[in-house]
Image (tube, rainbow, N blue to C red; front, side, top):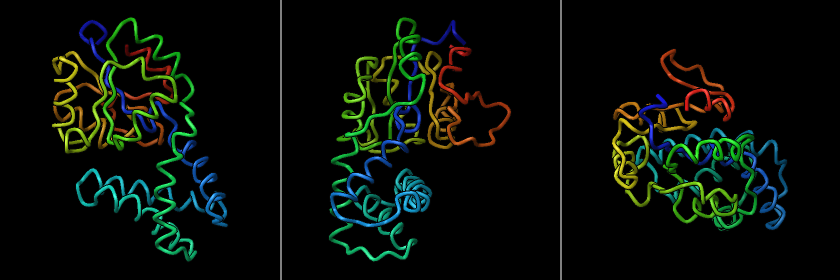
Length: 228
């Protein structure tokens, strides 16, 4: 693999940028600002699976950005049987995006891995995240300079696993599919999306899923060194 790969494509959230940790810190901040009195751990236990459900619907073009941002909060408060008025939910939704990049924890091994890969390969980002947020994450986490290109779903008009996302990223990077590899946490969007269009892939198994035996995966980012 090392001989043919020239370009490495990374997902951002849950792969390099520790979304769950940063998101929890953001909710703690905006709940204090908006005087929402709920137990944060209980909120997150409901929110995290609901958020994943909404992102799957978003990837499948079944909800738009506005409904994702509102619905994931509305459904979480409903699940907790906590009454929060719609205008407050919209405020929380806006504040969440506004303050999300206040916290920019990255996964253990991120900098060491990028320092290891940068002299050997051209590095890129392919993300389904919102355009106005993702670049801030890269900048504020001080990792933007590692990447040659950033492809996000809003510039392409579709989301991973749609092959148009990967085609756009490959074209932007000016690299053939046989010379690239995708690294991401989401089995459907990142791994199957890449493999189904001929792009090699490594799963960062952040979610501890049971994967098919033919899928290359790591449990820690630095394990990627054994493949690249």
